[in-house]
Length: 267
Image (cartoon, rainbow, N blue to C red; front, side, top):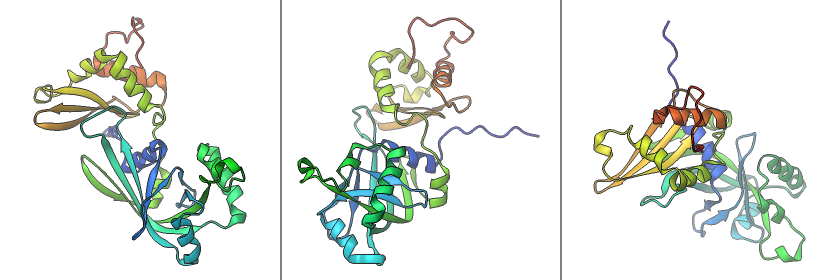
C-alpha cells in the first residue's frame, strides 16, 4: 500500500484564514458608497463575519434601514508581503454577502466572543462612552457570507464557507512578518543557501523571502524578466518553532542536524 502523499502547501481555506489573521484592516465595499475601512473582521462560528464600521457612518445607517434584507457588500482583504517588493500584494480575498445590523443587546456578548480570539484594540471603540473616542466610535455589523474567492500569483479559487470554518490559520501567521524581516536583515546567508535550491534559470536576479508557513518557504525572484515565486516544501509539515528551525536547516542542506551546534541561531 502506497504511503499517503505529503502536503506541500496550505489549502486555499488555510491561506484565507491566515490572511484574516494577518490583515491589519479590510475594506467593505457597497455600491454607490465610498469603501469603508474595517479594523476588525472576525469569522464567527456560524460562518458570518463580525465587522467594525463607524457608528455614524453610511454603512451602519444602511444596515439599520435595510432590516432583515441586509445590504449587498464585498469585504476585501489584502495580504501584503512584509518586505518592500516590486509587487507587494501576495494575495487578495473577496467575501461577498449581505450586511446586517447587530441588535444592541447582542453586542456585549459578541465583543467578548471576538476578544477571546482577537483582542484587537479597536474593539474598545465599539459603543464607547469615552468622550475621547467621540469621533472614532465604531459599531458592529454582521456580514452573512454568500461566496468567498481568493486570488494570488497562481490564479483564483472559490471555496465554501464550511471549508473556511474547518480550516485554521497557519501556526506561524502572527510571527511570519517579523521572521521574514529578520531573515532578510540578519540571516542573508540562509536566503543564499535556499536560493541554491532554485533552478539555474531563476538564480539570476534578487532573491527575497516572500512567505513562511508550516509547509515550507516561499521565495520571490525579481529580475529583468519579471517576478517569479517559488515554494520550497519542507519534508513534512511542522507545528512549532523547533520543528520549523530543523526544517529550514534541512532545506539549506545544513550539516548541523546530528547534534552539532550552529554558531549562529536561525530564526
